[in-house]
Image (cartoon, one colour):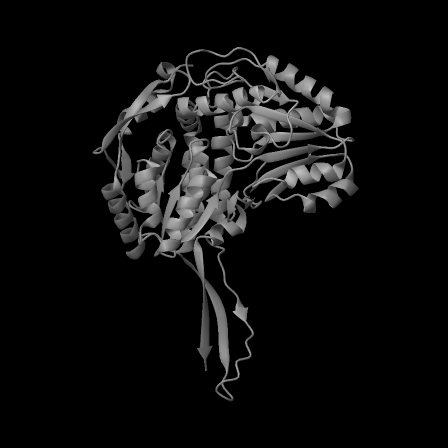
Length: 494
């Protein structure tokens, strides 16, 4: 399937999605920007990007929708029903959304259908349920003044107010929902900024939210660059919570900007995620886990496995199996369901990943490159790097591409030291058939999530977020909804 053979609904959407989506309508004034198809490098459509003034307008209207109670003033059951209706509409438009995501981001249509849309439907329904379950607690207090006084004390969860959500280009629709739906469940209103490379699926979500019955102005989308719109949203005094997923460098800037006006913030940032394969691991399972965990969405996943510490007894066979697997992968556009190697999101990302591969080769690592990829578009062939050491750039920096770096070890204590010797701590996986080693080693791995005999598998009920330079705060579970509330203490003397 090509862009021309995409569904009529998708083609119609490309024509009407002209810019930011504010108060239920498109705002088409601003600087024009082409939105590209990564498989060809050619424009899909053109949108108008906003500036600081448009960001201010979006925040003002989002604040008005919070202050006038058009969302938070509803009963929690009414808001839950609207969010469940939103999930139903996502499901009804699943293939349309998957096509939009694939054509704009480049990923496999199979991943867009099964992960970006399929997981999102379950996520929205899970989070919608929390709308009616936010609660505080009564507290037994022993206040001694004045003498003989009695008190009743309890806590109350209330929405923080206006939320600014800034989302990346790798899973634009899914990560947008990770932020928007918990915020709405908590009673907040949201202004969202997608990546300039991938604004389209988020705009379609905003349309569907209106169709579901979410009042206009409760969920607004403002397009623009991170340097202008993103910065302004982060520093805006009427924004009470900033939630960001992206690079550690930009996350630090956003956190500093939010602190200046004491806004709450959560940051889901970069990762250089290890996969630790012990001598007793099932080799076939580990290789398949490496391919799924390392090459999902061409490795453009914050929690992707990218450095592999493999016991020396398995190392050579592990590398051979990986090389054989990448050699068998066929390249093509994401919209082709048979293609296993798809383009990266942009020319800039392609150049960045290729630079890491070239420098690894120059530094003496062995580089095995898979099958040839098309010259047109932003492709990088899956690459296995062996003969590297733990101190090389390729083993320490986040490549964010289809590059699997394999390093042998002899001693498990040595392996744990290398696993933890990183600025990042988002995810990690341990591969072993030993329960005792699992129980002994997982608490010692410095990561927000540790998987065992699997990698990068998520669930709406399981909190997800990083340690160290991988961020602050959690997505998923009740922790996600609570992050969009303030906890107030009430103390009544009687």
